[in-house]
Image (cartoon, rainbow, N blue to C red; front, side, top):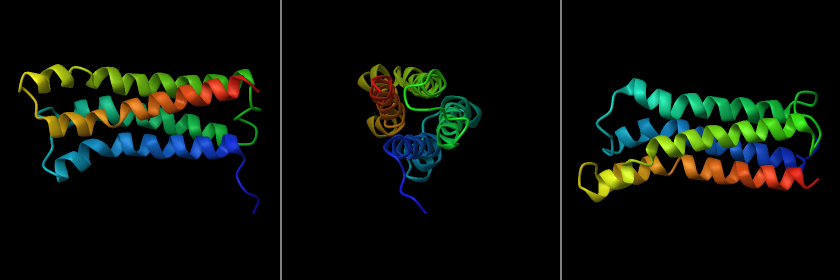
Length: 133
């Protein structure tokens, strides 16, 4: 078995971040840090964008579907993953003012906010690194 190329390793790391984003609502509930929102909203805000990121990562790892580094196909996959991470981030941004006002607790807010920004930032970094090839 040959070692992963750097672009493939990056896709695996991004996939792990997506898995974290998908697991956060249920880990938060298990830890007593749940937000007072319906489960379907958690699915829309965490699972759907997480699945999109995972699909983009899987496509990058596929020999034909992923495209070469710097190719338009690969950049589109990484850009789509970045947009999905942005989706997670933006839907949770209101938690900061809610936590400041005491509407939501800081623990649940920080737990939920731990998902989107890492996915977004890492995908944007991948996009810039891959575009330079």
